[in-house]
Image 1 (cartoon, rainbow, N blue to C red):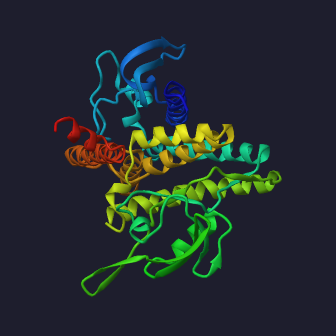
Image 2: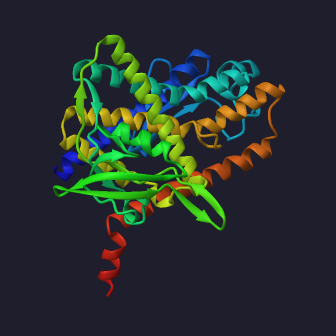
Length: 371
């Protein structure tokens, strides 16, 4: 696909995800009496701004890789009551400021962004299923990289998985079920490669001394576009909810596997990976692109629910603790864990970018450039 069209579709997709996520925060904040000063699609310098009747500044900023909702009195990272701003009374601050709201209200505002991402994904998958059917990926695989368990076990791009653990494999979901069932065990695979049938044994574990550590990630993804299976209305709703749940759960498990060193950090992708996924799905048709939109909306919701300060999940956790103990947490403590969380998230983003550049052979090109 042409790079200009791919870039335009990528920006469109990111903008949709940002709008959905931030709209959740915005609507629930407004419902709880919080004044929203600004709603921005994109970050950085403001390209366009218009003030609405409610006083909210609607913005479109230069870098469309994120966005934000700025709420009244949101001057610091702490959830402790802030000082009264110039020109406002104590009553104004209590009515309009997020930090003056009850912990359960702050919890709902923080959780609304990810929840809207999940609801959006369910809606997209429902209409896609009703219109075209539920996506079902053939068990033809692409391998994540040469350091992945799949590659070191002998699997290669384009392999068709015929059997796993002795059971016939009709689609990629059935293959995933056998991978999950094989954690900590040996998983025999029967594959078809270039019209030739092969048998491969994958050890879904690693040995650390005398200890056997189960591995949870094989490092594969579907290679071919999905086929679509038609469903009725009720079945479509059920399929949409279950698909969203599985996507979120799989994403959480993958992150946990990386954090516990059961999977390689090289499985972390960044913005370039998202760009490639968007371009690839768009080249496979509208349905594939829309399905990718639902996938990324679910991933965005799941990642933001991680209990890490600076993410929505961190705010949910802090608000829940304050709700339980009946008082705000220490301001300095909240600020410290916020910046620790910020450092972790920035580090994760840089790791994803590094892996993307490595997969694109950027560093090989750079090395050859200076030879």
